[in-house]
Image (cartoon, rainbow, N blue to C red; front, side):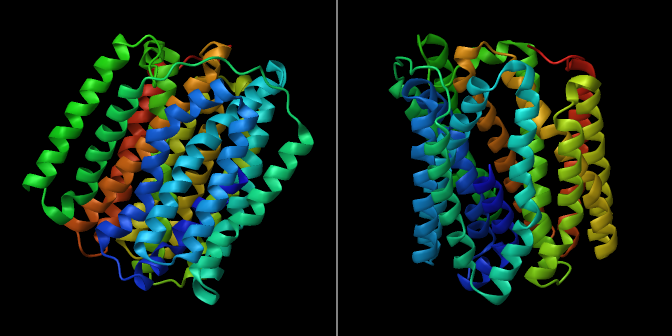
Length: 433
């Protein structure tokens, strides 16, 4: 969690510098963010199955090595192709790493202490979000952005040493069959649709290439759904979505992924490009988001059962909606002060939602399917982030002046209001056991 949070919080602040140094256009800049999210979304189902089939500890090690190597690639090959390849490898590694990490916690920690363990898992990682933006600003402004990726290397090495020392208890691996056709269809379908969404503003939404990608990707995803229903052991068990608590939780996490991408990535970018802050200044300006996030994670994440899942999710969605609206007003009026005021409730909302929703959604499925379920949850949340990138890129293309950022934040506020309404009517008051 430390590795993933530190990486994402650093990248957001360094993105304008990378874009300028590599002379990238808006579409290419969007790919730097979305290729990582795309690989996470596409391969998370495979990562979940690998955690079940090969063991969570083994796949934790594989994912950590892969992420560390990917960071080295980006630092040593400072070009658009090198960064894209490195971010893609990091996304695949993260898709292996995250389900394995969640599975380790769910298997090794007793149920009575699990909510506290999830709060530690989320809170310790998010603690590094406190220094990540400032660290990314220092690298971008005073060192080089390549140094920002090299920071991941000692973190990865430390994680490998620690897991060898801890020797966590896990269930023995299970025999898995592999749906090769399903893997090909979901990779091709998601890849085509995401490419169309990201390139639409540059190529034109009615261009033959975009229309062909949308049609081909949609057909592949439809075939994937058909294949999943017929397969004895599909790569992505969509039948899990028949359980209402799991489906609602996954949908809410997707909305959260959308909003987190807008707030942390494009918030950092807009503070530099629209507000004309230096990278280090923009990193410091994000602290009003990070500090409340940590406090909310500590106060709510480990105690959400006391308040009830419905109250927690509705309150978290309301905080994020209000904060996004206020931050949007700040960007519309070029006021850094108003933006930072809006970031505070956004941080509270993220800290309130992330850990409880993840724990409750995973707990909604039987233990031997939690590796698969965690992969599906990760896919949903990263797809939400990808849609956030695509929507924001389209809004910025349609509003070349500084109002585009404000419009993007207002759209996100509306999404979180909708998520709050869904939580109020469909979330269970007590979490599933």
